Length: 168
Length: 316
Image (cartoon, rainbow over all chains, first blue to last red; front, side, top):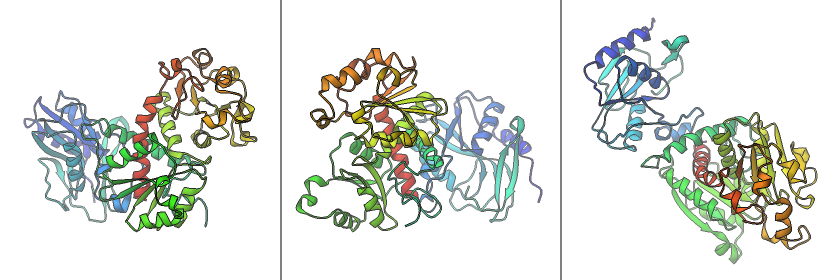
């Protein structure tokens, strides 16, 4: 199957968000693909507040069976979360479990006024009552495949499919 | 038993008993994970839910304030339930064996034991006998090892120096009786520090320590020259009055870290000490409280590093 062009999806995602975010809105990218998308959106939307980054490793619901893998990155939220309008940004929205974990991390920083979700790709398959306010595009993907965002030369984003199951 | 008793079938860290024999990748995984936990400890809410519902037993057969307290804080920040036992004052004094004590605590559904013991190898013994779902962390055993102290020191060095690959590190003092020194040497060499020195009087440096890949110096002037990191060891009081050393004053005269001696090291060298310090014996107050001292950051980093070790072993 042919995969959509991630750069085109990014343009559509930015277009969907334009007019829905303002100078009080803060973006928080989820490691690692979500951070790449958030960095691009941050520039495209001309947002003023610095970008936040979250790693959900310490809040995942599958620690019991997976343990702590390598590659955990520090979370950094360089603004006050209390009372803030926040858009969480992830690359691929699938089961919703990552977003559940990200919300829990976020609320340990403070009580935001509002949290919305932006995803470059919505591939369906939700296991939790979570939905995105903004999506770049929708894909139908077999449950055994995972959609992976890559960062190429010059910061160009691209999508690929791998055979192993993911839980994004 | 095959291979390293700390590692599971696919090489994952199931217990932390000693730095010796651990691959560099595991040490780096712990240090990287600790960096993320350090970012948690800067938040308003310093807890994460990782070990919710788990029970951590701090089993201290030998007294310790700093180590036990930081393990306790670390476990609580991982949302574990923590039970502190000073076994020296309880059932062992009534004659119960070590393994019976552990079996009884395991029957109370312990998930993780943090063990300090005056006898080398006690945490290994426990790790060999507990059920497979129970994990053991060595918090210092005899003269053998103190792996979490070494790891928090590696974290401190990486924090202030960035990279291990060009460093000169001096470990100064009573290397002979020090479990900390042994763990530091293994950690530093595993992480690729090119020059590790041990500095101290002949009576306090173990014979054949060179086999661990270190250079031996008996003179502070040559031992400290141009080093980037000075790791002081505690001189235990009970060593001072025996045959090994004439007196505390005499020791300070030759091996105490004074501002003048520290000036021989690189100008941006950091000074570390695992505590508790003997001011005026192994270290001058002007150095301990000086601009190059990172002794208090070591304590702070100890929490994040112990969180990382507990979370990694509990997940494996």
